[in-house]
Length: 305
Image (cartoon, rainbow, N blue to C red):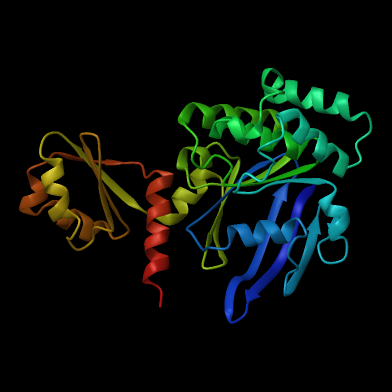
């Protein structure tokens, strides 16, 4: 039987009259990397803060690392690492000094050895004496990750950890995430990058505070029932302006020299591609991608009253 690191049911949270989370149930097995997707305001950060005990749900129940979410929040917080969207360390302290401060908060024995070990693990040893304020975005994220795993948590909650960093830094960061998962750590990570979501064993999509779909990337794509066509060649930039407004076309976008369109009504989409503006191009049906599904779900959310 699979042991669940996160097992919550019917969570709800409101701030005044605004419902942020409604009837949210989520199960994440131990040792899994789970991607948390959703548009701005979908409730991802609020959910993460409830899971780590910083916010109390208005209703619902469940466990995190086997501890009751409502009555054992303090115990849960000692066993998780939470990386917020905002870099929240002291810029006038060095990397090592910041980590030593975190080690004191967790009362970690032999702090010097613990800090030295995590500096080596995350590749920060040669920057230990550098002021945190002088780090680039990618190195700041590494330092924040080091602080999150310093006390050897069983669960890592990452809230858009690679926002604003370059592609190389993002890839290196994700390599580290998978190394941690290989050692048994469970990771729940929110992201807007579809290439990152595809690196997760499971993806969960939130919209309007509700869980819309969850599963592997392939399962989520199949569940959307999208039909996708692609054309390449000259003139796609001119054609997209007309094609985007045709009935049956939910999305139309240019990627380099390729024009990609998607919709859920195959007949309507094929009729659109037979119109003069589209017929000048050569089309072929292609497999939908996760970013096609993401835009489709955002569109559905915006159209709801």
